[in-house]
Structures are given as structure tokens and as C-alpha cells.
Length: 334
Image 1 (tube, one colour):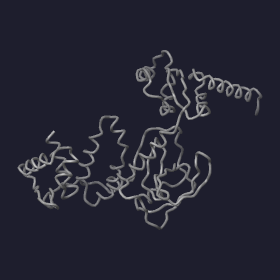
Image 2 (cartoon, rainbow, N blue to C red; image 1 turned 30 degrees about the vertical axis):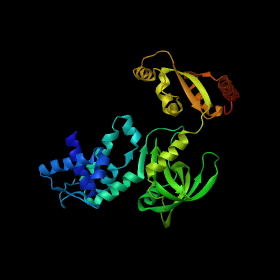
Image 3 (cartoon, rainbow, N blue to C red; image 1 turned 180 degrees about the vertical axis):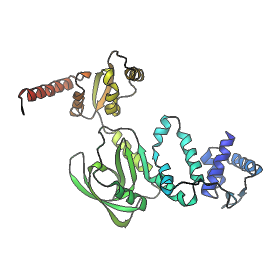
Image 4 (cartoon, rainbow, N blue to C red; image 1 turned 90 degrees about the vertical axis):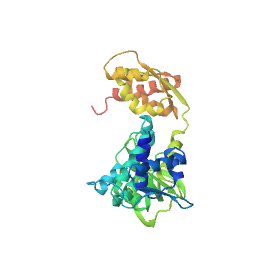
């Protein structure tokens, strides 16, 4: 709507000062001619806005014309800009709204707080989608990581890798921190290459008295997207079909949502019925795992989850169950 666009122009000018008509048109997805018409409308409404033609020209407000939000502390302003990843807003149909909302808040912040708020939006992200492992408490002080991120300092890190349990040391150039389903990750360059490090695998971390060296024009969101896709694309060639009792469906999905292959048939309806306490036929789901051994974790659900295929996995689960029975049948510790 035109009224929303006029407000967006006003807020962008308050935040950035002089802005070219072309940049405003690009941000608001309209023509330059429309921007000039909107500027005339703002002027007619009493807003002290003016346009300067020429190569270095642009559109601006007269100095001093703005409104401030009062009562906010620096930490409160920073907290407002610790963002959930854009996908979360897109899933709710709020993708365009988040950008508009942040422009409004940024424009209304007191000038001394704007820098910290903008820095927080570029250095901290929240990604709520679970990966295959459950989060564990951090083993280092996250405050040290935040200090490196906000003060543009390098980090020295000793880290135990999950794939081979090897401990390695790194000197890193951090881009920021990302919370992924409750687990915190440090996103950084090591010798110019993007890497991520789970906080619960960090053995020690310390600040280096050197300024950070990031790649030009690269932000946290850019690096995180590359790393996230790298993990999501890990091959998972083992196809598994299971039948899940509705009484454990919600818990099963909390652990294995990332392993699902596409939208399962009638899954939404089944979840709703399970939450309402309705009993019915088990729900059949297709999953993918990187290896047969990784799929053996399905045994923890006992008879509430039955593996239909592959046959090799069924046989492996039988062996695991028999080994467990034999262990307790020996009566150890009794």
C-alpha cells in the first residue's frame, strides 16, 4: 500500500540520511519515478524532505527531523536485533514483514544505540531447525566468544571434532554466533576458509590481541548459509520405512524430523489426532540415514516404532535386542 511505502521511505531516510532514488526504488521494489512521486507526497504532507539531483545527489530529510524511542537501554536495543533466521519468518508468511519491522525499529532507536543494534543483527543469529544430534551444555564461556564477535578480535580455540574425536587448535577470524536448535555454533574463517564449531565441543577459547580479518563483503548470514547447506547435503543413502504409533509420534518427530523424506502423507492430521489423544493406525514414514548403524538408534522407541524395511536393519535391531536381553539375563550387579 502507498501509505506503507511512504512510511518506509521516511524511516529509511531517518536511518541512513541521504539515499539515492535508485537505492530506495530497489529496496521498495518500485520504479524511480514512483519514488519521486512519493517524495512529493511526503513534502505535501508537511515532511521536510528534499531531493538533490546530480551524480552525488539523493533524497534526504532536513537535519533534526526524527522521532526517538525513549527508555531503551543499550542491551535492550541490542536484544531486539538478535534475529531468528529468515526461513523461520518465511515459514510463517512473515518474510517481507521482518525487514519492514526492523527498519521501523532501527529508525526509532536513539542514535547512540543504533551502531550496537546493527552490529548485533549482523553478528548473532538464531536457527531453530534441529539437526540430528541433541544439544549439550556449552563447555566454555560464551561471553568470551561474544567479546570476540562484538569487538572484532581473533580467537584461539582448542576443539574436539565429532567425526574423529581428534583435538586440534585453531586461530580464527569470527563472523558471529548461531544458535541451532539450542546448540551454539561459532562461525569463523580459518586461513580464509569458512568453518563452524559447536560450543559443547570446545575445550578452551581465548582472545587474541589481533584485529579480525574477514573476507570483504561477507557477512555472518552468507557464511552460515554455505555451512548449513554443506551439512544438509551430507549423503544419506540408507532408506528406512517405519511405522510409528501415534502415542509417540510427537516425540519421534522431535528427534527425527531432519531425517524425514518430504512431507509424509497425512502426517499433519496424524499429529493433531495424537495430540488430542485419539488412537488410530500407526503412521508410516520414510526416513534417510547416512549409514545403517546410524539408523539403529530407532531401537530406543521399542515396540512403538517398527522398522518395515530394509531387512538388514530389522536383522540388526534383532541382534541389538538379543544382546540387551542377554546382558540383563546374566544378572550383573544383582
